[in-house]
Amino acid sequence: MYPKKFECVLKCLPKPPEFAFDFDGLFKTPLGSILKDMQKTPQNPAWHAEGDVWAHTKMVCRALCEISEFQTLPIDERNALALAALLHDAGKPLATREENGELVSPGHALKGANLTRALLWRDLGLSGKKEYQSFREGVCFLIRYHTQPAHILENADPARKARKIAENGSLSKYFSLKNLCLLAQADEVGRISPEKAERIQNVELAKAACIESGAYESPYPFPSPVTKYAYLSGKNVWEDQNLFDDTWGEVILLSGLPGTGKDTYIKKHFPNLPVVSLDDIRREMGVKPGENQGVVVQAAHEKAKELLRKKQPFIWNATSLIPALRKTQVSLFENYGASVKILFLETEWAENLKRDAERKHTVSEKVIADMLSRFIPPEAFEAREVEWVIT
Image 1 (cartoon, one colour):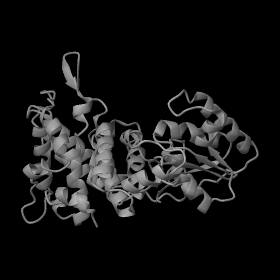
Image 2 (tube, rainbow, N blue to C red):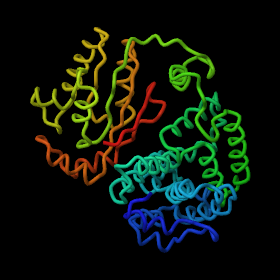
Image 3 (cartoon, rainbow, N blue to C red):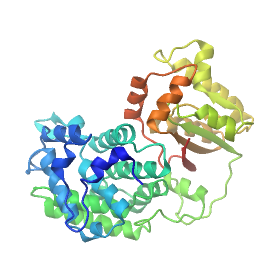
Image 4 (tube, rainbow, N blue to C red):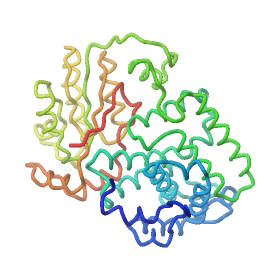
């Protein structure tokens, strides 16, 4: 199922009967530069007396290999979890800094997920096919949320938090709270710290809470998309309420890199819907991509509001690369009584660049690569419906 470019990494991941990583081999793959950066990155000895990030990572990987539940996973699921363990702290070289005389690495999980996504997508061929996408993003979800089990009981509503994270399993079959807890267990076992025993116990308690939430192995079975979205959005509703749908229609928000074929997709699947396109408005106003986009966004919002007031379904056509931008748009559309569907469009990297080069208004490879490094695909709880599409 894997692309040829990825085989060099695949052969270094643990497999029966020995269940061991080939660390030396991994340094010879495109992951080598990340692993070398880990070797150069120190950690706070209060939490990681074992040493640098790479020393910790090796301990985590070895701890994971000793867990019987890991050994019995289906092979592709096991590969995804192994890769997540290898790269779970890949963001620390980017995030680590000194604060009040101590080393901290805030946001390292998200940075690591972004770094991993870009590398797997661009350099290791894991893009442009549904199976590749599901595997890649399963790895990235595990990295993104690997710190959560140790702290999930600190939430006011642990079950709601668990179900929210678990819903991403509807987008990637390689992600589940079960595998996340296995990674968290290995993360705590694979360190030297005076609080190690307490932290391992916290993960065990988190595992019990996740099982109790009904979303441990798969997303929670909500009675309807309306209930699911209201509950995961933090509304004051029960998870099993069957809520009435009071929206008048659907607005579709597109998300994806330049060159993924958003315009073509619209023409093929939604030929009769109005489109609010930021690119079109930008060109109409003579605003260049590198200039202040405030006036472009304002004009797009006014056009969207006109359609919303008429209760007219439409397409919002923009790259919509990060959650904050998508949240702004989703909130606007919902405030006017619409439901929202987010469509994430993806194509294979080389095909992406080829399509961009063939467009009348091109974007350079450097710019697209930079956008990929910042891109966070829409998660399952961001709108009533979220769908990932290969174009």
